[in-house]
Image (cartoon, rainbow, N blue to C red; front, side, top):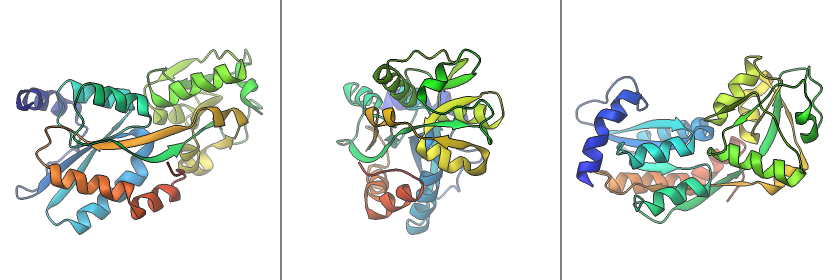
Length: 250
């Protein structure tokens, strides 16, 4: 395990995902790999964790869950992993890289995001199959992409997206930048975007509720601190902050 983590240090450094500047020499760094949709609530939780744990520097790597678990499998040093679905957490468990039993801490559902004013006139899920509509979705291996495929099958529709992105934040960015007429993202992403997008709910989203699990990573040099961070996320304060950002309970 030590060889796996040592081998991954150089590769992870190239990612630049843990921050641009290093922590003070006397601090303890906690590396949290978390699904892109968790960025805002986790950054808030990270600040609270640092405030209550002197000398601890929480750094995040936010990306698609499939990307994150792949990085961990390849040796990137991580202390905590939070996935946007159980399938990618199962990959970590199957590889015996979990430090503890994963705990479900939140759920999320899909929503259609369109630019302000909804210029393409999207009204429901079926609208996304129109020939002249530029639709952007997540790639199938990403949790939001797997959920998209589920609602697509449930509704008996066939989408023809102009691009498939590796994270839900990339889909949202395509919509907010005017590069897409519509995108399938999470309810939480629509809330986060504010006036930059309009959200359209659809009943088929109930068929693809994503459950978010979290665990410590095997081999962490900060097992106690990592477990404490997991406790913060899964505890009352963590769920309160997640709810404020639009997440539902597990």
